[in-house]
Length: 346
Ligand SMILES: [Mn+2]
Image (cartoon, rainbow, N blue to C red; front, top):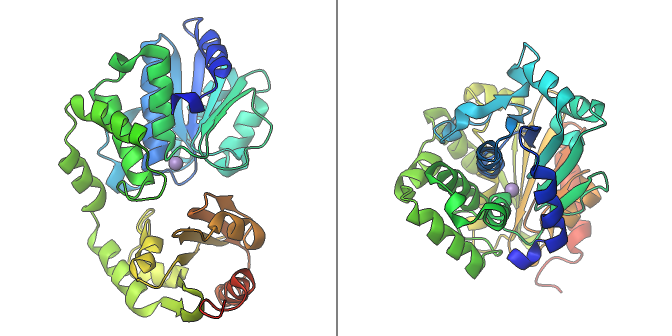
């Protein structure tokens, strides 16, 4: 794993971090998940320990099931920062770290604040495919199972294993656990488990973390899941594809909170014959498309080709500006084209 991190890039990073007291922004993506928050807050903590002034921010609020995490009080929410404190900090920043995403356009209003500071160096630490060539330094490792795993390796390379304290261990574990589907996806490596062993040595309570993240649904969320699977899941049997659609009206009925539908897209993949799953979530301005797959089915390619998005081979996302019925129609036609002849006839 450490060999995935370029030595000379690492040396340059160390050089840039050497002068103490710099103003540093650490930003993670919109609709922050466990990996975004875990990696950003762990990295923030190391930078603070190194003597820097750090502003760690995300564009909008994280889901409530992540609200228990250590250090989460140090995470600013740009959309709720009515005093403009975060924007002022960004304007004066020396370094800007972008974690767990690579498209600056994914940052809502924060995109402009970051673009406006033309003197700051921009550094990418991320595991999504195809980063744009806008960074002064980039650690882009699509093979890494999470950004938290990448950050772990960078922290160890810069400051040694002993720099990882209890809070950082907890944060990084959440990121590693959530981005690997609780250590079940295809990108697991022996190095990941070695990292987890170090985190476990810090005394983190793994069963408690698991409970906080996976067994903390609200009543509305579990009822919405039941409704989504029972009433809204459609299966395209010949292609091994499934999809779930949820309109704003339906979400309102279940008192939808941000993050409530997180992970729903994975459930159809629990059906033996299904190897690709999609979810369409209606928001005010567009329909959010989430895609998941198993094995060789590449939803990154699918998302790029049909839904103005991308991501990883087995987990990607995109957008649709059509109505819900039109979006579904487009998806069905896309599946037929993408898979060609129905599976079994090939
Ligand atoms: Mn991630």
